[in-house]
Image (tube, rainbow, N blue to C red; front, side, top):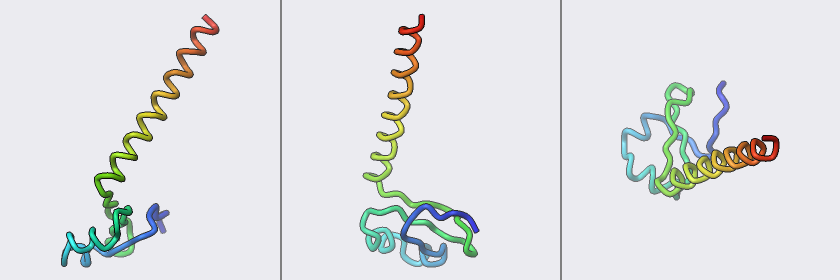
Length: 75
């Protein structure tokens, strides 16, 4: 079985019944959607998605800065 990277899960059938209620019920946390007990999708609230993108940007910039400092130091 796949590693599920969310603490909340629902079936795709449940999601189809009332998607807006499902999203409200999970209170802004990521939700994994399962199809036949396999991960089909992850639903991310907008704020969570923004934080994720910010974290990725910071990680990328940090690595870029480290690389450039190393190049300056050695070069």
